Amino acid sequence: MRINPLLPALLLMLAACATPFRSEVARFHQMPAPQGQTFTIQSSDSKLSGGLEFQQYASLVRERLMAQGYQPAANAGQATLVVDLDYGVNNGREKIDTRPGSGFGYGWGGYPYGFGPWGGWYGRRAWGGWYDPFWGGPGWGGGWGAPEVYSYTVFNSYLDMKITRAADGARLFEGRAEAQTRDDNLTRLVPNLVEAMFTNFPGRSGETVKVKIGPPSSRG
Image 1 (cartoon, helix red, strand yellow):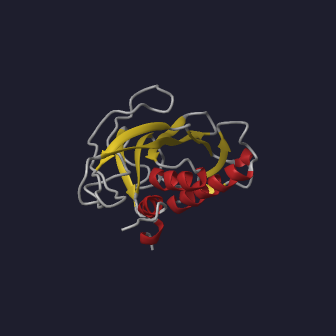
Image 2 (cartoon, helix red, strand yellow):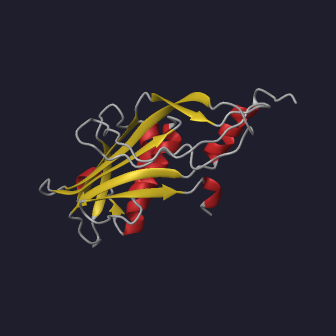
Image 3 (cartoon, one colour):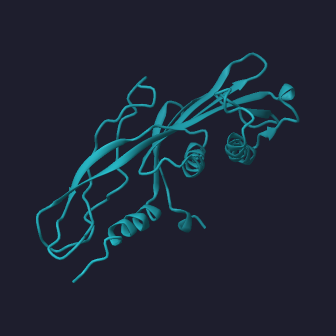
């Protein structure tokens, strides 16, 4: 039987679309209950300030804060809270693994890798590794043959959010969401990281949680 050589790539793409987005989120805060506080959002990186891409991500954060009961300020000078955002993705690193071989063509599948450490974005501390999101449990594919060795690229992305009281500069919130994915598309990654950051916001101070977000088709 002849197998279309494009089939394995297509199957991988379909699997990636159906894979939940997993993130690790750490938050520290002394957030006041919403009582009419207003906020403004700015970029931690001056090179991003004013950019259309940053404005798109800032609008997502704005909607989340409004849902919490905080209100956007008419202008930056009138804000009682200042929100600083930073985000990015690295250049990726290659990983090697094996999958069951096939005696009749291409197959695909995989096994969980288990737990293993992976460093934080800046190397400031270890944000303990806890999953590999790409192959979960035995997959399907060829029925026999020696295991196939394959490689793929892993990207680490992050979203940092800090909230400061404008009157005295007191820090009220520090949060960081990190993810490990097969792609480096920020237009997909940042909205998911924002959703992870605001899951059960503001969370328990000093606690790191694992957040799983279903694929778009399952979010209703």
